[in-house]
Length: 317
Image (cartoon, rainbow, N blue to C red; front, side):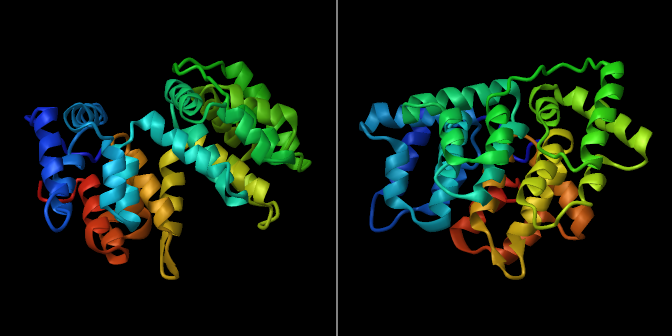
């Protein structure tokens, strides 16, 4: 369930474009006006606003926002204003330019999007960077990480609910044997995770628990805590089966006493506000005994805080 709040009647895109132009003029930028418009428009509406702005003023709205805004607020507005596929292309491209921790972002995009969404992201990557996502992932990664991530980002899974219970039993047994022997990078394990439908994977791991008396993630916790590949493997399974729990873990790490990881916080809020941020927020409160909105407002300030709160559907609009 989404948290985005869009009014039943919104102005024509050209009117929104005109209002945004007004927000950029004068002595200072009217950040509140920008938030009141962009934080309450759907992806399709935001796309139409960008088109109207370009047609009317001959400028790219994103470039104007980049020029007028700064810091974490700018990042949140820019990510939000991009079309979802463009945003995923940007996030994954940035991830291929960093090192190990960015592997999680690549996996997150690959495993929490639908097959069509991932395909659109790859197409947007082609258009924007004149090369493929998979070639950059292959270039960026090595060894066991490449072995897992390349098939994940190129996957096109079946999206239906049909499952093969005989296959689930067979593959639950196979995976248990590989985990018992600590063969975490086995080709069959990666093949199952990167090609099976999410419904089939859930059936397999349910059978795994029934047959072996513990959840798959519990079995994987017995490995080395410092093993970065094993941590990525656990996150992969979580994203494919219970993505809301994965996002809660990322948010909890992003909002902590030692400092805020604004990059992760912004990424999760902007990519999930139109999809399942309400479910994530409910799970966050259940696990942390504090509403997500309160946790965020304790750790953020100013226009950045206002933007995130608006996307959480907790502002007064």
